[in-house]
Amino acid sequence: MNLDRILKRLPLSILAVMDLLHCITKAPRLLILTELLSVVSILAQQLVDISPKKGMVFPTSLFFIVLANSGERKSTVDKYLMKAIYEFAKNMYEAYKREYEEFKIGAELWEIKKNAIITALRKMSAQGSTEFSELDEKFKDHMRSKPMEPQSKRMLINDVSTAALKKMLIGHEVSLALMSDEAGSIFNGDLLKDSALFCSLWSNQPLIIDRVNNASSKIEGARLTMSLMIQPELFNAFNERNGETMRSSGFFSRVFFCQPESEIGKRYEYGLVTQHNMMPLDDFYATVHRLLALGEERVTRGDKRDVLTLSPDAEWLWLEKYNQIEAAMAKGQWLEEYTEFGSKFMEQATRLAAVLHVISHAQKIEPVVEKETMKTAIQLTELYFEHAMNLFKSSASFTLPDRRGAEVLLKWLYDNFNGMPIKKSTIRRCGPYSIRNQKGLAEAINILLAEEHIICFKKKQSISVILSYRKHPFLSNGLENPMVFKDISGPYGEPYYGSNISRFYSGRGGISLQNNTAVPSIEDLIDPDELGKQFVF
Image 1 (cartoon, rainbow, N blue to C red):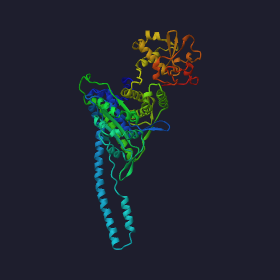
Image 2 (image 1 turned 45 degrees about the vertical axis):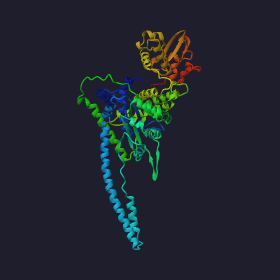
Image 3 (image 1 turned 90 degrees about the vertical axis):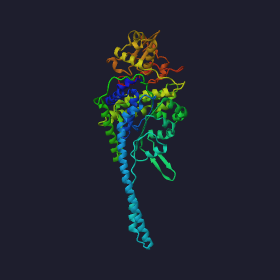
Image 4 (image 1 turned 90 degrees about the horizontal axis):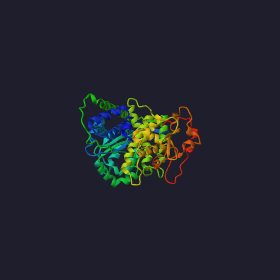
């Protein structure tokens, strides 16, 4: 997945901040984007959940692990993007300290009054009095009025024990962020070894904390965003020690992995950044403060989080991608080696869509997430997914095909489509320059074929291509696409299903080109009941 293509789809509020920080820090754009998304996740997790379909509700917390070498300016990016959260967290802690001081004074006064009532009860008992009823009620009322210790309002943690983290999470809908721009000590410690804790927090599963000589406590409704930056060699060492456990437990599949391309050696300076240029960042800080305050107000009032839903078009896109990923996890398909990641793909994309929606509608968070936001989130998830697959690929794993050529070809077909098949030789002669070579064009055709964007025919050694009516019903200019008819071979040749690259994809037609696997006929790929309906992707 091409990063530049995704960046063009991002909200202007995000792009402006990214461009400014890239100008200031020269850090990799993907590193900046990832840290920015983690910041927005902190804001979103306290305000909203998201429901992609009826009966399914997800939190909006995100886990990130960023692999970047020393010198990539991780700390500088973190300093800029986290500034407003650090300020808010400091103010919260100061407020907590004041509340705690008031609590201590109240607790001492309460203890003095309790002792006074007990003394009075003992005195009456020593005198042989049996009239205790008034003091009894007074004592009961007093015990009910015991001051409650204020809940810690800590938001940020960067190095903590498992026991301390559990203690912080106990309470009413606690929202925390585990953030570190140098997370080597975290990966070398014991915190992440309790993968069950992190998996439960990510999935919003309640936890019972049992303590020796103490009553059990419950973690429920808590949210945790995580962003850990670490040098690749340190992560690789951690993965060698604990990788199998972290994958089998489901922890890694809940993480967005990011290993951006280094900018070292390309970080040239072209001028100074003025205070006027800092406006996007100042606006971002104001947004962070406002959304954090809204989250605190919601918790104080005891209100439930708002639940975002998808628009009909967004839900349709969600279902299509869900089915595509599910088919890709079948035996012999490209996700066979990554089923744990594939199983979490759509939930990750959905959470990311909610985060993008919140920052896009920061002034007023609308209840419905639109298709374009969902599409951007899916593309971002694919990008992070590729990074994860590169980290954990095995010798038996498939490699993701490069889709750039396929996207170029699809656009060219859009521009040159006249309802009739176009010969492959014509595309090589007149098509986009980048795919005129034999290998590049074959790969592009096979990807589009497997994704059902096109239908292909082979006559002798000549291959012809036509856009699929299923995916592109409006390009026939009101005329019936000739490919709809059952007798379709005729002058165009026999159906052609491409080479083995099609095994990387499984569309609605279920194309699978493994050896000794029967492929469907073209008639099977066209559902007559769907003709005339609008299928917009």
